[in-house]
Length: 399
Ligand code: ARG
Image 1: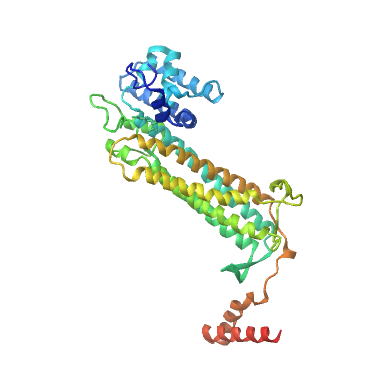
Image 2: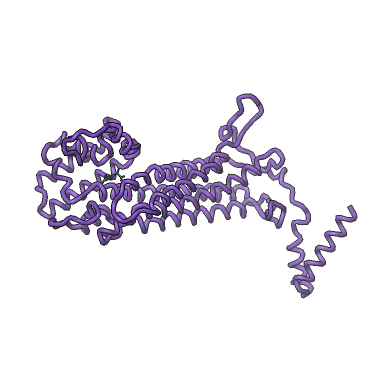
């Protein structure tokens, strides 16, 4: 018996390869979470007198050892195993015998995969929050290092009003902190215990305790009723990826500004040599590839959101294998966003504005002059605006 649903008939290898897809590779990151969930599940079974204390002990020791040896690289999920759930149960049964076969009472891979995914997503969201806050911290530090360096404030990419490195950096920092708050908010949909919903319709004839596993795993609530659980697959994922889209948009805009500032024409900023890349043919080149790839990564994360929404949109209720295809998009969005935020924090740490190269157009104070006319002379803003415009016009005609 190779797979959890194996009843002895051979499976066409081509069907196995297609249906397992990338799962045996992707599921590697779910192993520690599936172990945690299985131990919580077995502990609950024992408390409900559905598993002996000895079996529980053996299961706990066996699963913890498997998590450790997996992390050490001693084994990996094989295609034959299909996914992490099958691989863990097979290895556990190999290691501890009969007790390993008792752990799957009152659950299905359908609630198992959701539990592992949600535990993983909660950790990932926390890591991403910290990464977003770190970019914000790097920007705040840059704003403080070069607080007094003046920058043109642009609208329509034209000089609008005076700004500064501090103000420019503070805007991005505030939005990145807000992105971190958004990621924390995404946990609301994630933090619901799917365990005990089993295949999607509960565990008839079995007295299991869903509150027990909720408390053990630290979920906020038990996901109820059982039929809601599979309906929700993809929603927590989409919610999290949406927040990543917001984060990536801010990192993309930051990149766009910096790429402009880094052109020879602007030369507002310099980057340390070790943060730029070169050209194979043009010896002088120092390219801002990091910024270009962060900008490009916004498309990857946007696409992941569309992919997840698209997979779920026309599904009816209950588990369907389509849902498995959410995983690659989810992991891609998380990995891409995390790596982008981490490298941006490093790059901002090495960034320096060059005050000599930043020239503000004299007319940039026009709005301020109009405001002053209103306060000093008591005229309307419209009149002040026209007077300053006329003054500027005269000056440029005299040039
Ligand atoms: N790899 C599967 C997924 O991610 C696990 C659940 C399989 N369940 C099933 N009934 N075939 O959806």
